[in-house]
Length: 454
Image (cartoon, rainbow, N blue to C red):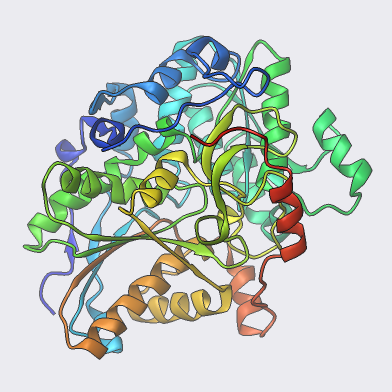
């Protein structure tokens, strides 16, 4: 079989995060104040975030030093392994070479602690006592619970109700780490009460949960808000994934032609892809870079690139991103981490520039690929990660059909050990390929804020 696992020693954990803003051919559109429509400054964000994260949000520096206390925690599981999926290649009978970066080795089982640890550290440094956040499938909530406990912070998590009910063990994991987890929409916030008054049976959405978490932070001086995806500083923290992968691909004597990640808000996709895209924008090898999303929440493939709110109650600033409209609530697919109406402004910008392509898949095809992967490689992927697996399989089969040999690299962003109900439903034939509600999408898009998307 030859080599199939590529590991780095602890001293190879990156010392800097990579900031793709330094290499963009065109800068991002400014973030706007929802009241004035004018670009916001750091002080406007100070009620929500620690100043260190705010400055990372706007900096143009290519390298941001990783604080040593953060690297010390990273040593619990980083560097994460990179594998060559030789058994999957054999099953597919493809000439393609398939590699995956495995982020499921972290304590909470996904890539999310890469930023949770950093955010908890910066909040602790600034004297913050409590963090409020939202979570979809629970990967982010459990990661922030883990990180908050390490740095002595109280963590309150608003978990999208459909996932709260689908994934009780994620909730138990958050509570094990010491966090408090509430189903969203809840009666604990004004925004939650307003949703429940209008939709008593609401299954919730990430946009609603964000509104609740932001409201709690804005109303309490000892509390800051923490976000697990979408924003620039969050994607920045994830770039250790791609930096490690570049070194590991060199160890393997290979170099990816195709780079793939699932995309909900954009953080694990960016974590793998941005270092490779940065190299390309500085004159390096051109690669096919694919962001994979669910057909039930097709932000990049069906959304509009426009200014919108990041939350349902319109408490956040306006950012230019691919969006389905802030009031859009997707169906309750099992890939809860991908059920977000918007996409990271950075990922959206790169799609608009033609540097990233987007594809959307239905969930049963993704679970088909996830089960095939598990039986070949032994790792059960999270429902979100099956989208990346599906794209990698499709690209490998395309190589087979064309008789071409390409190198494919994807991010296996987390394991599915807390998502086995989804697999149970899949084997029982209960999973449905749900499309988005066209009427609901049209209504949400009609509510986009009137801002010139310049």
